[in-house]
Image 1 (spheres, rainbow, N blue to C red):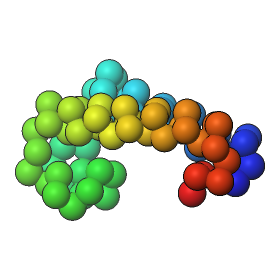
Image 2: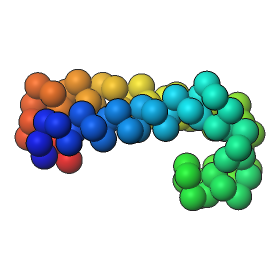
Image 3: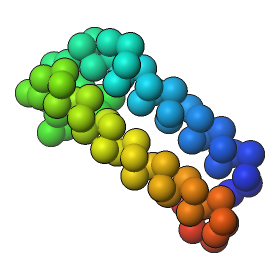
Length: 76
């Protein structure tokens, strides 16, 4: 995968996570919408649980992004 695409995908994911964590996105997707925008197991989660889940996933994504910058063969 090209470096520019790798960076673009990370930026898009970061904007999505930023919206959920800090700008009320978790409240908006709470309930049935979380099935499509998070995962099937988030159907009965509260906004705080969704925010925590996205924060944890975003942390792992940051680590994976940094690893992918230095080891291009690990970009999936």
